[in-house]
Amino acid sequence: MNLPLMPKATAVWLIENTTLTFDQIAAFCGMHPLEVKGIADGEVALGIIGQDPIASGQLAAAEIKRCEADSVARLELSFKAKKHIETKKKKGSRYTPVARRQDKPDAIAWFLKHCPEVSDAQITKMIGTTKATIKALKDRTHWNMSNIRPRDPVLLGLCTQSLLDATIEKARAVVQAAKNKKEQTSGSN
Image (cartoon, rainbow, N blue to C red):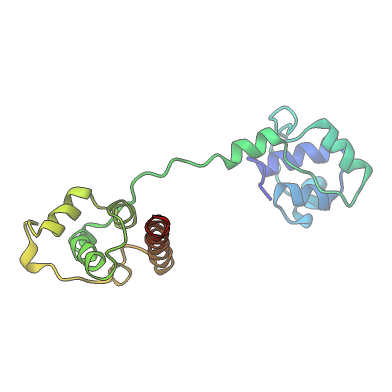
């Protein structure tokens, strides 16, 4: 379950302003029921001012009423709060340590030798390199061409085995689909 942004402050408010059970509050706030009981007893979260989850848009008043009527029901975040939490950050380029950067051309060479069906865009995304580097390796014009030897990108630590397997499988599926389409068009003529 997605949790409120300030769980203890939300728990304080829910304890003070609702008749929800400790289990319901604990499940919503991502806390242990004994911790919620400690807040209610004044032993935990001293000095924390309660945050109204209705005003912050985490809950609807109707949702609290529904759960107050049924002690087994669990509080659900509002649609607006779910949408806010689920918005993903835009992924930036992945950082590769300086010690691993010289291994990228070796990984590209491995792809060109063992998996030629993988596109340049897929290699770029997986290893974090540029299309210019891939082109230089294909044309054998890379500045360090004499020292490049194909090495598995997983063993070099540039990607995970599951990502590599998924990428290769996807590339092979695209090649197979193109092959099937070509056979269909040549067979119908």
